[in-house]
Image (tube, rainbow, N blue to C red; front, side):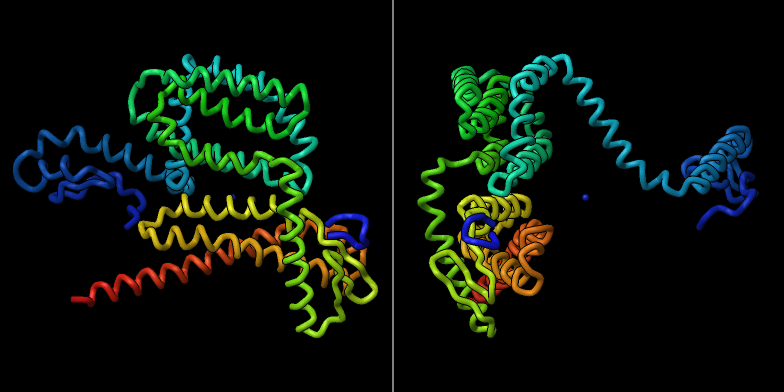
Length: 371
């Protein structure tokens, strides 16, 4: 949104309990299976020499844990890190040529994206989509490994050739859609070649999710975005007018007080809608509801949720400009409104999902009471 019509808008042991209790067979921290053999009665001679040493060792471990209370809490992350390192070390001989080739191929592309398209408002969702997709692949990778060794899919090499050709065209002709699309295609081809078609079926959603970071043709975006901006401007005007603000509208230009604001593509465009749609699909994949009614309903309602979040963003920017002036509307608070957009969309998704959950449970209860 712009201030004029030209610009756009993560029971402790007692001290000294190293000695065993006579007749009980249990020392400080001693395993029960060992102590039961030398209580009052038989077996005292067989356990006497081993138990004091075991008890002293356990006391030392207990003292170390007492002096470092965070050791037990950090044991699980350390174990997970050790497992990851072992897996990487085992996979290194097989995968390091692939990693090296992908780095040489796509590092220049990522350098251009992070210094160009991905720092703008229209394509700023790209790093988030790519990072979440990589995390989904990492989350699904144990399932891929559980498939065992698989034969290379024959379709992998043609897909790889298409990905490399698309990358060449996008890089040399500066076609961003081809250059980013080649990343998705090449990574899918690598999975096909290395792990087979079964692995790609397991990882279908992360690769589908990556498609949301591929920019669409500008002509198509412009044709679809204009009606969306008109609708957002109309809704903003009527809501603010109903609240008693001096607001008027001409097309996508809002007039409030002495200020004119242009609803730009970044505030109510197709890319914003697609980004919020991707956020909703990611939420669905993460939650994995068993109810088909809940999944389909939420997927369909993401579109009006996205529209509502866009309207709220434009209202926030309009009121900021009205009360604090042009500088506030186009400064830090303009960027902060983008965060408001995604937080609003997330809150609406959670609220709608809760409502659908209640409806699904009610439907299930009605069916259960039926004959």
